[in-house]
Amino acid sequence: MSLTQVQYFSDLIVKVAEDRDKAAFIELFDHFAPRLKGYLMKQGADEALAEEVAQDVMMTLWRKADLFDPKKSNASTWLFRVARNRRIDRIRRQKSAALDPEDPSLHPTPLPDIAEEMDAKLREKRVRAALSQLPEEQRNVVRLAFFAGQSHSEIAEHTGLPLGTVKSRIRLAFGRLRQLLETDTSVDVD
Image (cartoon, rainbow, N blue to C red; front, side, top):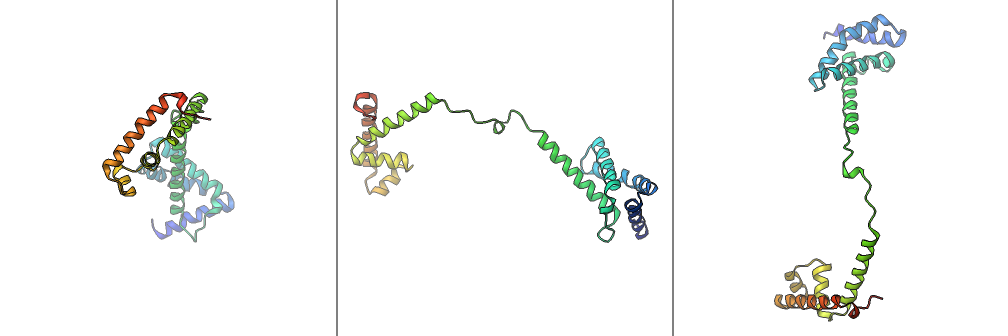
């Protein structure tokens, strides 16, 4: 586009802005609408969407021509920027409208089953009570293994005990815990 054409189209937008000049608008429409549609199609829009967005851009030109500043950009740059932004807006709207109603993140978390929650709390109380009845050395290795998440080797290193002793204490603790938990009367949960 030559410098005189650039100035000519900028002058037409100014006429639309100042005088609501329909002839100037028609000339702008005839020149830019097909170019905008082609540009949008090259950007990936299908023909119907490109046509719709191009029409929308031209309506924006009619309604907001007073926002055009020929000192900041030329008519072509301004209109193609509006077209690009409108296309991006449409893509964003399509993405937000395309939410999957079956997406688990859109559904509220089901309320916990009260009976299961109570059973879990009772089990926890029973296990804590049984743990308190273990000898200190067994309770310590169980705490390190299951509450601190340490491996048997890490426990051995942490406590200075031989690895075999750590394993034996955990095995003995499990045997004692099983025995305590299997007999309800031996574990006081009050």
